[in-house]
Image (cartoon, rainbow over all chains, first blue to last red; front, side, top):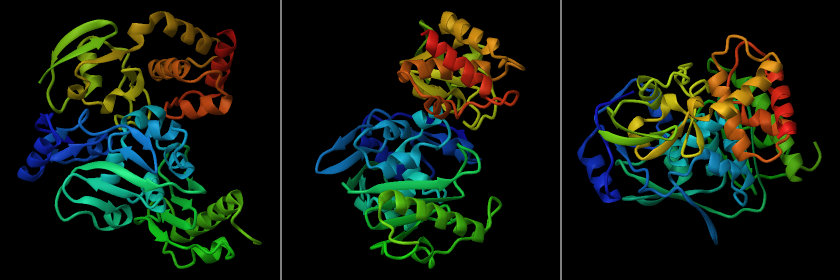
Amino acid sequence: MTIEKYFKPSSIKEAYDLLIKEKKSVILGGGLFLRLQKSTIPIAIDCMGLLSDQIELGDEIVIGAMTSLRVIECYEGLPMALRESVSQISGVGTRNLATIGGSVCGRYPFSDINTALIALNAKLEFYHAGLVDMYTYNNKGLEDKDILLKIHMPKCLKSKSSYYKKVYTDFSLVNLSLVDHRLAVGARPGRPVLLEDVDFNKSAKDIISDIEFKDDFKASGPYRRALAEAKLEDMLKELGGLHGN
Amino acid sequence: MEINLIINDTPYTYLASGNEYLIDTLRSLGIMSVKRGCDTTSCGVCSIIVDNKLVPSCSYLTSRADHKTIITVEGIQEEARTIGQFLVAEGVEQCGFCSPGHVMAIYALKQELVDPTLEEVKHFLAGNMCRCSGYEGHHRAIKKMMEVD
């Protein structure tokens, strides 16, 4: 990535106005994945200090867009599905830089945290568009550019994330997040899919039988399916939700 | 963009381009312990500490570091020497290229974790690669260092 101009706005409104005015301008999150891209960015807008990096645990959970993945990993009181989802994203140093807002807005199909947020029924609070469902956003994005302010999610009873990586800090070959009766499966390698009202009386194999897994250079579709079945079975046993099998 | 940095307790005023990363800034200022490895945040060789957080300098925009406090191996020479001696005693030092990054990560680990288990140590250092060793020496060295501390 080549940044032609770095700009630090004095307000979110100023950042938003510039984002809309300059077609190829981008908002910086952690800046890690942007760094790896070959594109040229005429204006990189840095909202660090303007966007929240705080976590609020009230009637619902609210996470500021600039909260680092390392903070989420270590924050007691957050759902385990969320904390587990980020714990093997590269190393501690990278997680100190990477932000939840950057991960969400990147809409990366391999993202472990996006799968968890979908299972957690998260809602995204944008500056202009207001509240948007995470699953909808992850699949379709927004019509216009916008700035993610915060991520909201309801509290849950039980949650767990699991994934398979060839190397400890690698991208997942498949990832799963189970939150109460919602199951999201990502890195298939397509975008995460969501199953609601999961019937725990079914076997892991039957629960994900309708989900499509595909081949890519990292793994075949059947291999991913076998991994997902095994991982889901372990998750269900750990959460005490699987009967039989 | 003119920025102000505090690097190893020394204040600097620096003219950074929008596309400049801390690894280049630090090396241009003669701070050569910061090595370039993968340049994609995967290897940990370029690890430094910015405002008490371990970060890969290859991906930290210099402009973002305005008014921040940066620590490299040059700024913690006593601690680095101690960490290095434990690593050397366990035969970890081979080519040595990853050592500055490992020293910074171990320094950050000591600041962040109290009496860590071996699993916690492994987890914390997972982002720091060493192509010469099998990491067993690192773990032995850290265990012994923690016992002494």
